[in-house]
Image (cartoon, rainbow, N blue to C red; front, side):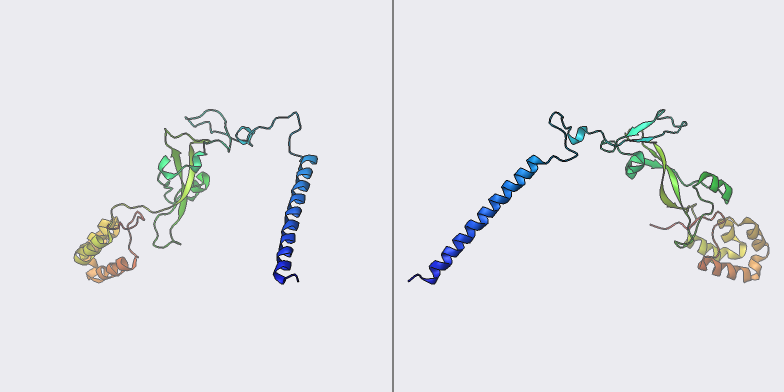
Length: 227
């Protein structure tokens, strides 16, 4: 009698042969389909295909401004080339100027399109932001205009005013208007000096205003920080 194990072994052998036969038929069918059908984008028998590095890429032309001293003609930027746009250079390869100070002139800001109309602010919502003019360094090769706008720089400046120093001036010498003299409020500082701090009332009010942020430098600069 034929044992059960012998029957199972024969069944597994037949299953293996069936899988191998199906794979061979599938490979023959795929080979015939690739030889009979030619893709629409492939070259004909007599055509020669160029490698990817030699393919004519889509080029973008950038018009260089007339006032630029570095380039005087239109530069054709080819994306596959190793030369990147100047505006894409990392920060260590460019030099950025300080924000333009419009000194409250909104018309100048609208005409130029960037710069700071107002300075200062204590929170993110109070601080204005503006792009600044950046220039690629002389020895850096790049495509397009070498002068461009970049960034979102906060309109904040520091002119050497320290909060702790001003607070000490206000507490010990506030009756003589020294705190307002240091902050640049010369007119009110003279009045505070002549009235001896408003007989103490002005001295106390300025102290509270200084602590709460109501009394700031006259040039709208922020407090310098200690490091």
